[in-house]
Amino acid sequence: MNRVYNFSAGPSMLPLPVLEKAAAELVNYGEAGMSVMEMSHRSPDFEAIIQKAEENLRKLMAIPDNYKVLFLQGGASTQFAAVPLNLMKTGKADYILSGQFSTKAYKEGQKYGDCAVAASSKDANFAFVPETTRESFRPDADYVHICFNNTIYGTKYWYIPDTGDIPLVADLSSCILSEPVDVTKFGVIYAGAQKNMAPAGLTVAIIREDLLGWTNPATPSMLDWKLMADNGSMYNTPPCYAIYMAGLVYEWLLSIGGLEEMKKRNQKKAALLYDYLDHQDYYIAPVQPKSRSMMNVTFITGIEDLDKKFAKEAAAAGMKNLKGHRSVGGMRASIYNAMPYEGVESLVAFMKDFAEKNPK
Ligand SMILES: *Cc1c(COP(=O)(O)O)cnc(C)c1O
Image (tube, rainbow, N blue to C red; front, side):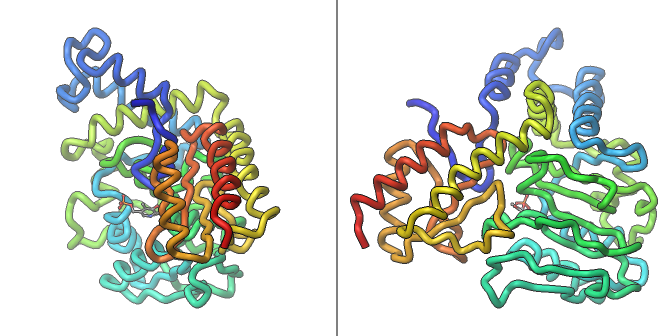
């Protein structure tokens, strides 16, 4: 069986050179005489792996020294609780609702304090990212939370909200490392690894140092960012193998030229698909052009049976997991870093062919 083009929203494709390197080292890592999976997390070999991973992530994202990098467990969803538990001082926080994950984060936040909706595009089925100004936020809010790329709806912020002195907290799960971001504009960035970074099981958090140390005393130790930072992400056993894989992905990104080069490649892939969508009338792209995601591209035929047929026939042709999320319907092509340009070329060719063979 050949490898397919896997358009899954997550877990998703990993770069082939990364998988091949991992395979070569699977049963015996370097001179260790054992697999990374079998190593003590306190061993010199693993210490070197996690340190190198952090160093390379810092290099890739130009993370300033006054930010901590944490390698955590529990997925991005666990951070929905960790954010209020670590950041609430006055007990107030503002959320922008731009999709399902930001709404989940907001609902989780409501368990711990006074959370307000600063802006929302829910009434438009999240087809765009709401615009905000400083005045959209309560001046005494402890933080403003956003989801930077909305995996399910296929939207992305084209701007970074101006929150004044209020720390901006962003879920970057589905767009981290897809292009450069100015880390200094954020108080906290977090991301589940399984979209664009590594296998599932790892969550990366990047936290400005002055935001550490405000943890609610009732916070479970595992969600206490300060405790994790003080212990170099090794308060307990970290997700060792996923960290090792993330490290290989960071090395791969550096080897191709870093995030500027990655952005060029991602723009080229996304442009191919959106240009096609804009110059035909068979498929409908529900997202407003300004809010389009470079990572998740949603489209529908408008006829449910045709959508089903599309996903099924595309899978048979070697393009898997194109079925859209149930809340949008239709199709979603997740074209993360590891998706080659050729994968998008075959998708567009398939879309043309399908439209011709299945008139509406
Ligand atoms: C996938 C995803 C999540 C959920 O991540 P888990 O690791 O499954 O908790 C949260 N936010 C965004 C933007 C996502 O894409």
